[in-house]
Length: 438
Image (cartoon, rainbow, N blue to C red; front, side, top):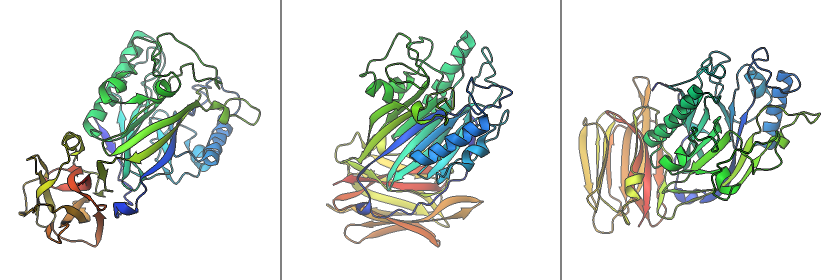
């Protein structure tokens, strides 16, 4: 599976968790903005496409939604962005036939943005293979120490046999990506799925069955009952009892409680001045509340978007009251490896085998309470060069070489470092600290 990895926007300076918010709210909007060139598809939407796109961008700014995913953002992309003022926005991948039409506009920064093309497409009912449709992935910073993996997708359209096969493949591809890259993380998946629960060959339940997620529409509008009979909606719809192909799934994590509180079809908020629709799709809008978990917390990370993902949280969540027994850091010119052993005997190790090892064994009641990390450039890639861990008794262990770009993370009183999450290969590229309550 090929990925395009865009350099992260790392404005990430970890600070003490005691200064961070412990709860909050945000919302998410998904909108297929009908940005195919008019000569290819007028989408049965009245009016001029450039004017309609400008209106959509203006309304994005007016409503100031937290995270907006758009699909079919092709040849009118510049107009959309010229009329929107969200501070964080993905760069376009191009118009037809070069781009995938997927973009994100957000009030929050992110790291690890990637575009992935579908492994399978079908032209049975249209021209789904005309553009490199697929999905995007990003790790969004909602608040201090509050991160969610956010996916935007546009699946294969149509109802011919090949369309159904391709679309099922598309959703399986996203589900597999979540299993590999988002293990242990809070996740949001939303976009134009072109799927319906009432079509037996469609598999929108895969995220609930394989990834432990909830569909906000099923949860809030359908009382948890998955429909088996097709119920078509008007556009805009004045009810959420009917089903459209635009959907949102979500889950929290062992460190973050996440709850959808309202679901609505938002087409009535996106109309032309004369009351006509702006797109052939009714956008969906979901409100969320979040709160930090009472058992685990995660610091902000430092480092670069390279190496393989790792996350100790899934294993930590199965251990009752984990406590660190020892920690080993390896390093020389840079930070080569990190390894933490729990009192239960569980070992979390990440990185390579280079450098010299320094080990600190904790005394009874002693905790790992804070850490300083420094990053720098090596072979044009951002990596961690240095790490120092401090204990509750004032002892320290360190490895690597300090740079001028450093940040410190500290646990709240009564908490201690019990694991890590980040990216690594033969060295440690990125790290964040998982705190457990002691």
